[in-house]
Amino acid sequence: MGASASAPIGAHGLPFTDADRALLSTLRRDLHAHPELSWQETWTQERLERALREIGVADLRRIAGTGVLAVIPGTVLGAPVVALRGDIDALPITEATGLPYTSRVAGVMHACGHDIHASWAVGAALLLARTPAASEVRILLQPAEEVGQGARAVLESGALDDVAIMFGAHVDRRFTVGQVVAQAGPLAASTDSFTITLHGAGAHGARPQESADPIVGAGALIMALQTIVARRLDPALPGVVTVGTLRAGTAANIIPESAELSGTVRATTPASRALLTREVARIADAVALTHGLRATVAFSDGTPPVVNDPRAATIAADAARTVLGAASVVPLGTTNMGGEDFAFYQERIPGCFLRVGAREPGGEPTAAHSPRFAPDEDALFIGAAVLAECARLVGVAAP
Ligand code: NI
Image (tube, protein in one colour):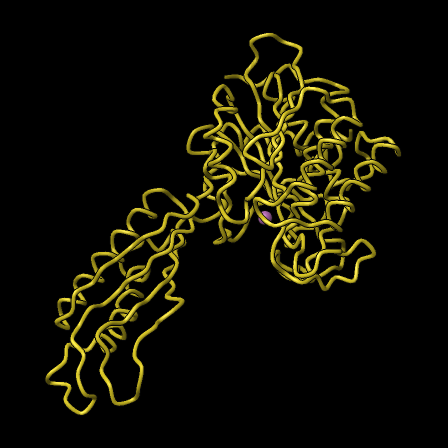
C-alpha cells in the first residue's frame, strides 16, 4: 500500500496477487457477459456464491431473494459491525461496447457498472478474510438497485439491524482511475415521481365557454411548476421538477374531460425533498382552481437523497488516502441528480457512498446507462481495496 504517495498511484500498488487479480477479473467479466435484470439475478447469485467460496468465505447466505450476504469475522469482540455493499443487477439496454466479454443476453447489459461493484465487494471480502478488520464485516451483494427496491428488501430482512456503519460505492467515468470522491453531505438526489390528473368538463372545440378546459389548465400548470425550483427552493440547493408526460384529448375539435401529467422530482436533502413535493401538490390544486378544474395528485416515493454521514465520509476519505495516496481524494463537483438506493440504508445506518474513478487516462467521460459505458477494470481493484480499508479504519476510529 502506498500510504505516502503524493499523486494517485492507480491500481498497481494494491495488495492483490496476480492470482487474486485473475480471479476477480474473471468474475467481473463473467458477470458482465451474463447480465440479469432486477430481481432476476439467479445466475449472478450462484456465481457470486461460488466466487466467495473460492476465496475461502464459508459464512454466506442468500438475502432479499437474489442477493447474498457473507460474514467476515473481526478480530475484536464487540467492535462495531460494518457492512460493505455492492449492487449486482443490470439494465434493459443493448450493449454497444464491443468488449470481448460483451453481454450474451439480448437487450440486457451491465451499463451501470454493477458487475464491477459486485466484484469489488468480493475483492474486499478477499482482502478482509486474509487480513481481518477489528470489526465483523458483512459483505452485502444487493439485488434490484436499478428499480430502487433491493435496499428496502435487505433492510426488511433484518440482516443489517446490528450494523453500526456502512459503505458502498459507484464507478464513475467523470473521474480518472485513482481518483475517489468521499465527502460528507449530499451526493445523489431523491427520485420521487408524480401523476397529476386535471378533471374538467368536455365540450365542442368551438364552444369553449361550455367547457372547463383541462388542456389550457395543463399548460398553465406545467409553467407554474417551473416556479418551484426558481422561486421556492434555496438557489444553493440543486433540485429538479420535470414534467415528462402529458396526455389529453382525442381530436382537434374536442375539449377533453381530463388531462394527465406525470413527472419526476429530484432533491438532495430530506427538507428540500419535502418542500418540492409539497409545492407540486399545492400548485396543482391552485392552478386547477384558477381554471375551474379539480386536481388529483398522486406521488410515488422513489429513493431518498444520498446524504453521507460526516464520520463515515472521514473514514472513507482516510481509507482512499491510505490505499491510493493523498492526492486521490477529489471533490464531487456537481451533485449527481440521479438516484441510488443506498440512500435507504443511510436513513437507518450512518454511511458513506463513494464515487470511484473509472476513466482511463485520455478516455471519454461516458455516463452510466449508456450502451457504450465501459468502466476501466482497474476501478475494480481500487474499489475493493478502498472498501476493505474503510472497514479496517472503523475499528480504530474514535466513536
Ligand atoms: Ni448504478
